[in-house]
Amino acid sequence: MRAKRFGVASELLCVMTVLIVTAAGATASVTATELYMKGVTGTGISQNANLAKFTASTDGAIPITPDAFIDGNIAVGYAWADVNTGKALVAVIHPSFVDSRQQPDGWHVHTVTLGGGATSPNDFCVASVDSAPTAGIGISGSTLTLNILQSKLPSGETPATLSAVVSFTLQSDAGCASGLAVQINT
Image 1: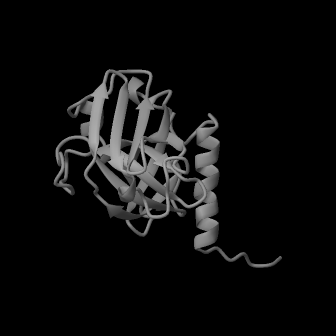
Image 2: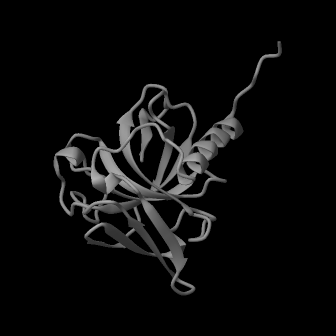
């Protein structure tokens, strides 16, 4: 039996597999308990050469301010991810800590890079939080809309490549170098 070597490429392959399976509607690591975390669909489009628009629609009204579920997690959000690179644009809320100047206690945006190594029931590790760009965020009922400059998207990404849309919570995970893992909700 040969020893297997795992590196960044195999970790990203694991992340891509999880995102592809989740985006296709297969069971993810946890079943969502809140309607606003279930049935997530979405899009990313170029509005013009400079501006992109992303939407996430859910089975229930998305809270504008933290509720008990949001308060009970490190962070809660929606991601538009590129399954080929592990890069994602996320709209997130986490009232327990401040890391953004735009709506630090409310919904705001980050670009992130994901990696492998998460322990079950988590899906993948947060390899890095790459930026906290300013974006226009609107919530109307069960739809979150995000308008952002295309130059602020994850490096090398376009609205078309950020096509896997999921809801997630952020969890502690000793298997991740950052200590943080993403748990996809379905």
